[in-house]
Length: 92
Image (cartoon, rainbow, N blue to C red; front, top):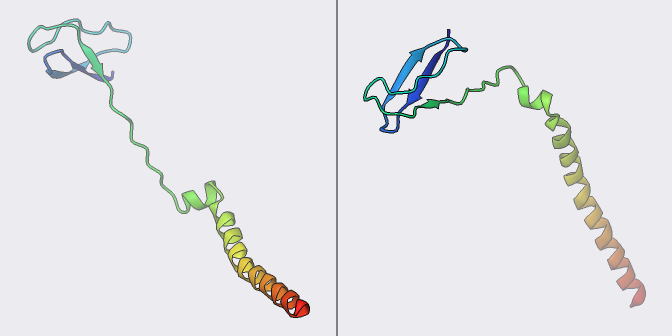
């Protein structure tokens, strides 16, 4: 049987062990105020395992491609500079 946490309008918190098909409580156990609100907490997610991000999302290939692209760019820019130097020499 799960334990549920409830909060009353005055801010009191209390836990209640009840079945899933049981009706929720209507009044606060501490002060008797109503209506009660069920408190939900986020569930933590743990990413465990060696290389989770590198194997599941394929970032390794993108990094290699970007490194290859960076080395190719300076070579292209020097080739363009050489072509402009040749054109200037021909026109002079």
